[in-house]
Image (tube, rainbow, N blue to C red; front, top):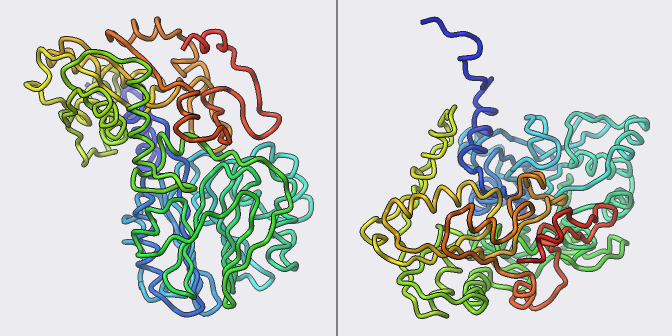
Length: 495
């Protein structure tokens, strides 16, 4: 039978197919923003391998695309492509051309700007001689850039991509004749939002964060002359670097042949790092601003048991991010933890799944229970969050089919009731299930015997402060003009 146009897949190429399928496979997950990594030394070092190892450690922060810019003999060379870190590094040859004295790298997940290949980072600006002068990588999202972009275009600055990162690049390029820290300070003055940035020049590497420090960025060293910058400390560990400190909110740190220099961005702001970095995004072996991520997630599980104790036979965690909180719940309750949800770590992103029925089977491909350990038992299951609720609902169905007697669901984060505007790819509010259902309604929808979320108050308690961004949990953000009271506020307070 001849196929009509309606029967043909609508996937134009592998890049868009993979991203569409990623959405299908990860339907109920929030996507990591991006990861940035950089090294500077006055001498030639193994920039190719250092970047590869460091970016591989940050792969969890972005899996759509990756790229590097290397400084060698005063020239900046850039390679970037869609795909995972190791896929991109396999394309680099000869390797010797990328063994220089400095490098910046980026693992990408789309936020602002869309999936165009032109938006893959690093982005770079050329000088009057046509050679790259600045190269930039950025984690976060800046807001209300249209007016500034138009102003920069009118001044003759070229725009080749559609991302907010290029607005940052061109705004700094505008002051390229100034000393680097001055160019950054002036260029970032009109820019608002979340940004942790690495900027490579022909003689230095600068790292800077927005005045609120919404996205993480830390500094390490390989020796007294070689400095490493990363979104998370796990990448420092990957290259054998010693952690020094975090880049402070509103700080510019410049590494050059003379060492490390600190300057102020010249903007005031209250420190408000994203709280979701702690409960969701960061790798459990990372340390962010003095907090061990694994220990905090264990404490979240303990706090959940304090909030809503239940009698059960076994505690399980949705691998991998739900496991530490499940261990904490087990320790607090005395209910044994058992790793009886098996994760397929080789899940392909090349499936073409045209129907909802088959799409649901993907959850079985990713996670499958050991049925004999489930049958007839009262189960407490912990996950890091509930977003749309679709994957959670299917997973609960799988546990019931395995013979679970009771299912008690616990979320190690508060209800997600508002989309993020500062660097997390998050569904619209209408698709956030906790923003549109009461806890009772959601319990019935999921089909569980009980349901609880870590409260915002409990999250503040385990973080030790309220100096964080809780925007996706409260609808209130540290950046002005995006604060709105959630429409579902009256429902939300019932949690």
